[in-house]
Length: 205
Image 1: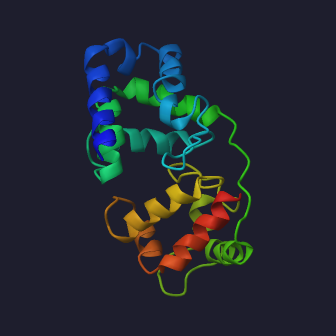
Image 2: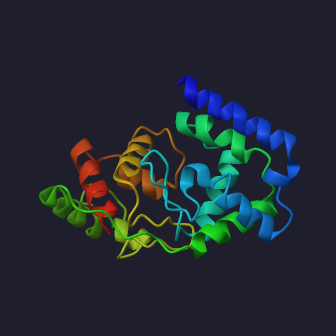
């Protein structure tokens, strides 16, 4: 916990001291910011190595813009958001956010990971593709795409870190992350095993 708090303080200090870093002047500087400062956690090209942080390569630009603004404005307020992103995001202006989002959306997503638990992944595929019988919502594929590629403000899920997906789904399940009502309805009745199954399947895409 101490290391995370220290990271937040350092990031906030960097943003406050250097307006040229966190409020980038034009797309060129924003891309440099994405590759260097943001790249420390998310990877230079958005292919984060640590499962603690989401992969951003190929992510939907509109979704990234929305998320960066909720982090900047402290709307997204779960513990990891506070510890890792409130500091770096707090000085980003709208123009810089748009440029960073476009940069990551243009990067090539990494191939999906190896399936460690085939039976679990098969269950996850079924959960992803078929409409739940216990909720008045469509299937995951209806919003996130048949290949989990995302669309519009719906995030790309394909190839995302399994650990990160499980954590975020659990936050939604516990009403600790603000998401659209249809997402709440789709997730709230999932069991822990079903969440693990979905994550196992999606990380392999």
